[in-house]
Image 1 (cartoon, helix red, strand yellow):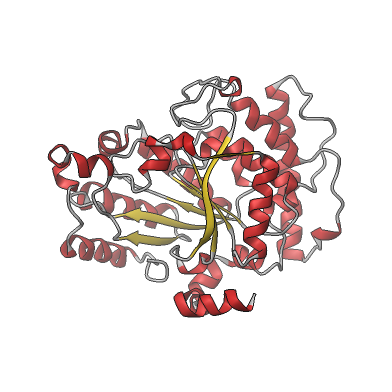
Image 2: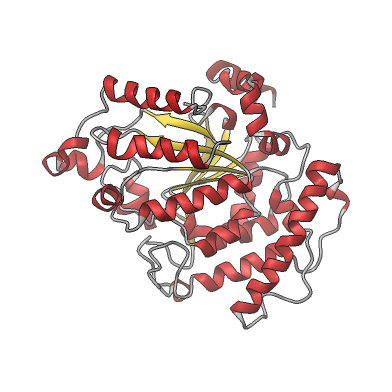
Length: 376
């Protein structure tokens, strides 16, 4: 632990000083309390909500959702007792079947004719047939490590990089694991995934950062891993947020801090650059729900040539709809993947964003009162 602390002071002293900022402390208060083991992670609470019958034996998906909604109300009440009244949730026993079990059972149903994301491609993943995301019935992990490059409140972040993605971004910086060699990673059973998370936490991780690629195709495996995880650790969902509403319902009572991308302000840009339809409606719906359910840092990558069509609309929407969010206005874009190979096809993004474009983005954020400096 001492070596971890020295490393943090050497490489990211802002990971410690950021907590003296009253805005960060207030807006990320739940995450901070779980990070410090003062409160149980939400999945730990979900494991303590009993259900009356075995959800894995239930034949009706409709009944599973009814079980889910009843347990969700109990979870909300118990979480309130924990966060506001100081209830010691650790003293509550774990039932034979829990709210978490219901979520797991539903998630596996949703990949048999997959509707985990809004592509709703219908792949029979339980039969070993990959979806558009390139994931089938097995969890694929390409790497895991303590990430020191994330936002200051998050590092060291126990990052798990999953293979596959439901987006086809032409500029993807992780294109090898998301698109081209998505299936070449290690096949990891949920029990093994729990061991990975445990090791990351016990060796200094402030959170478990589910990323990729994209974590959404791995939702059933991630939920099942939480049945086996025996250490308290915040669960962080680092996502393009193009999941279906069904997946969003499964995640809301599990995630302690959200780290979503809000990439585009235009459906046309989303189709041209990531090959997804109805992006704006889906992403804003899910990000609004995430904001209303807990702590959140929204990322927006400034794309060259897209300040007016995307950055301005994104920041205006954030200011109006997610006022508690911290925002990372990211300047890290560089031409990668198909843009680097075929720059003439994507001329406006075949370069880094200019100083003027980045300045314009910051000025828009300042004019809207967005809190971004602490995490950008």
